[in-house]
Image (cartoon, rainbow, N blue to C red):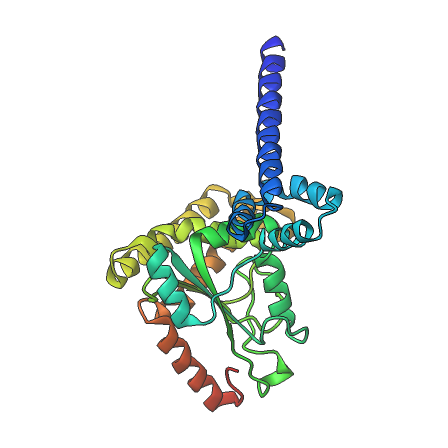
Length: 298
């Protein structure tokens, strides 16, 4: 008990020290926001944004306490930038930026433009991606692009449809998320819409694919991962025959097996895109869909 108490005390003290350090950094930078030189104010604002989500509380407190109109504007702008996804202007711009930064590209294909309330899938997808706890991670690891593929002629006016790998029908219309290497070749694609937990799992799982030296190596790694997931499902099913007899709603193991099986099926559905340049692939796909249903990307 004594050891546990000491450990908890140490952890608590470390947390307080960390919070105090951030508070001190915020206070110093907020002071610079009132500097006479614009360059100093601009750099201070950038440094505040770089502190990230952990600095939001101290920044909000500084905003509430400040009586300087310009400081308040700069603080408000910094708070707005923290925890929000930065969207590239288009695929070409994303490829250029990803090449400079050496990161992957995440292309969201949805059934409407950003901010269009009629696109239920788009609204939900943005809500997930722009969660403060997740957006900062996405901004570090990817350049993000929103691809509007609205097809009003599709039955039910729902876009291309799709369901998540967790088996829950999501808001109709989301077409999928493409993960691409820095040069723009598709390394992974999963149809459907996403929860934050599912996306986090996928990003962790496919990280080696994005770092593969070329599309051919990425394809081999992807196939190996797909086989591994299928093997996980098989072993789990064989090791738990009694659990598999229960309805999925009553068995976490049964649900886990089904989730892996659906994941394998979703990976198989995305094989055709792997290795293709993302922009030309999407344009060709949109042409095919336009021929079938009418409408097209806007």
